[in-house]
Image: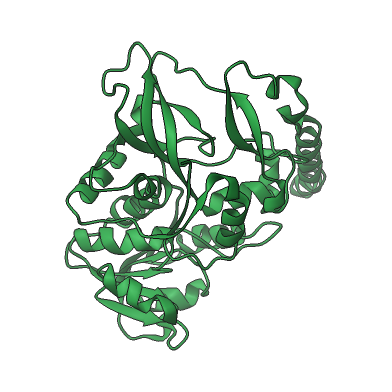
Length: 366
C-alpha cells in the first residue's frame, strides 16, 4: 500500500511541479526591449538585437551603449563575427523546451553572437596580456555588435597569417572539434576516426585537427563537398548520397557525429568494441529534438562496451591558445563559405539555417 501511495503522489506531484516551473518561467519571461534606456545611449554603438522569437526578420539594428571595460576586461572593436547554429536556435527559440531556460514568451537575452575577431581599443587597469592595437579573437555573448568587452582570458592573439574573417570563424566550432576529439574522444595517433558532417563548421575543423593528431580520418559529406573535404586532409571521403557509412565493414575507434542522421544501433555497428561515439549535433525539431537523441545516448551508454557521449564545448583560454598554435603552424586553416556585410546579417542567418554551409558563415564590420 505504501508503494501504491508513493506512485499515486508522484503521478500528481511531477505534473504539478512541471506546471509550476512553466508558470514561473512564463511570468518571468521578459526582456529590456521596452526600456527607453535601450535607445538613450550616451556613447552609442550599433548592435543586433531580437525582441521576439522568430525568423531572421526579427533581427534588427539598435543603438546601444558602448561598453566600458572593467578592471580585468578588454574593449574590442569587432572587425568580423561568425554565425553558429546556436545563434539561429536562440533566434527561433527552438527546441521549445529550451525556452524554460532562455525565456518562455520572449528571449531574456536580446543580444546574439559569440565568435568575433577585432582590435583591442582599451584595457582595464589590471589587464597585463594585451594593449590597445593588439589583434585578437575570442568569444562572448553579444558579438554581433561594433564593440564587445570581454575578460582578457576570453581572447587570444590573432595569428598573423589569418584574416579577421578567418579568426572570427574559430571559437565555437573549432573548440567543439578540439574538445570532442581530444578530451571526450581521447584520440590517439594512428587511430581511425570518422567525422559525420565533415564539410560543416565543426566538421572542417575536426578533419584538420584529427590529422594534426596523427589519426586516419574518414569524412562523410555530400557529392558537392567531396573535393573540399579531401583538400583539407581527409584520408578517405564517403559521399553519403552513394554510400551509407553505417553499412561499411571498417570499424572506427572514434566517430564524431555532427549530424545525428543515423540510428545509434546502426552507428554502433561500425564503432570498434572499445570505441567512442561523440554526439555534437542531432536532428532538429520544434519541441524537444535533439534532446531525445541525447537521452538515448545517455541511456544506451550504460549497457554497451562502447562509450557514447554528448557534450557542449567550453570556451577557455588554454584551448584558444592551442588552436592559435595549430593555425600559426599551418596545420589548421578555417574554411569560410560566405561573408556578408553587417547590415545583411538577416540574410546570413537565413543561409545558415538552410543547413548547407561549407565551413563557416561570417559577417564583416567594415
